[in-house]
Length: 620
Image (cartoon, rainbow, N blue to C red; front, side):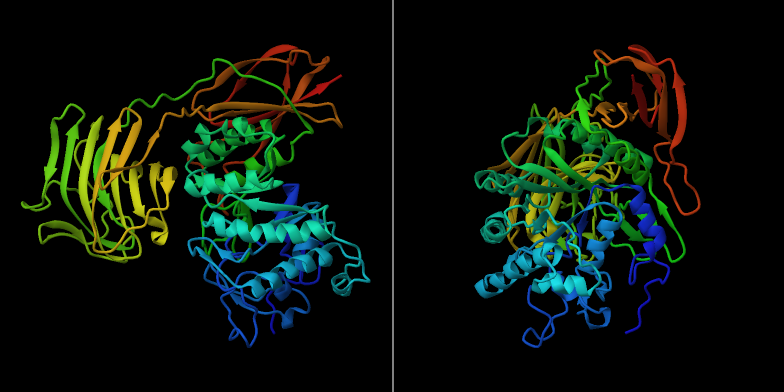
């Protein structure tokens, strides 16, 4: 075997990590390290890499494959489309977590595939083997050198235990009943032998919806200790959901926010995430762990965006999101100090307005009998396509649209987001009615409303995610968020009658005359957010303020019952244009440190527009 791992590794570890990447992670001062990641864990076959399985290479990540001499480790063709030699394996992950002072948090497969595959493996013997592998993993991490797996750990160079305390089972499973039946068996086996280990469950791949609600019900009913939530949403969603965890039941499971990010690496994304993070810190009694994801991306081979740290063969750079995460992670504090903000600005959106649209994704579909009427019954649009498609604009510029057999057909199965639009961007309070038929392909169809342009609209995505679920998605600035969701699947060749009612900011959807779902999009985006924590070691009050609006916010700060304070505060500020983005050639988003004179029990401070500001105030 020829290894292309660098010789000059972080802390000189044999078969270790590239130094510049590891140093950027270490600079975050992470509290924990979740590994090996998300969709690596629970996709593909759960069989072993052996003759019995036909040397199956498309497998879930199985930790025993990744230990021992590098040249003897199994290989894998993973979910993300590249090969893994497992040169970076579980021993290296544990060692790296120790090197950066982070708690290790490994995740094992639950034998229910996620990430769109949605299949439960029904093989009791295989399940038993994976449960035993999990027990062996704990022994590998914590067992004495006299135990089988503790001895193997020592043989790899680490006789001392790694101090494992938390273990995740599964990742984003979309089949909550099937997942939980298996999770309970993992948890029972671990708790019987290792009652000090926290076994972490999850709530599926989204922030809400049928799967999310069912998963949380199962977790609560079974008194799970901690639940892993994942979501990727628009910056608007993060600005609107600062109070997400305020209403969670404090007597229920704790939250591990294992993956979250807004869609993009611009400073506007980082600002929205920072505003949301003030809510995470305010709810630190409930949200025990949180991690931006994904962590790393090779500029020349990208599977997912956004990412925190980017690199090529020669150098690496932190995104705007990285700088924001670093500011929060290196100024956490030890306790939350109750604080409130008054007279903060909000963004009142008014009624949903916009044209209508039709689209497909990797699917051929036909549409007919489009009718749009105002709430008072006035016709706004009527098209049976007998006169062609002259009322429609090919907004996305993709796909192959044509009128065939009296219907409007998109026939290119490879095309993604083929949006065509009709009507007026000023329309509000209307009903959209259309008949839709899937002809062939992977998914279903999309009916759009509230359309401003290709980057700002709503659409009812029926049969999405490889025809595993359906949802209404809201897109703002090209970034999506889910408004309502269920498990509806679309049949090929069947004509569906679809109706969308838009009233103010309330939307009701009907499928074949039956109510499918509804939502009210009335959450207000509040661009000014704050949280205060205390550093017990220094006595510092850490005032953290996010001003995600263009205007400077002149703010009066009252410290209330705080002890006497020093007149000078240390200030760290991130400020940049909303569309600023760090690259390997430029770093427009970077921290600036300064001092502020004039701190007292009550004082004023000007928070710049589009900024994240931390004031460390010394108490005496």
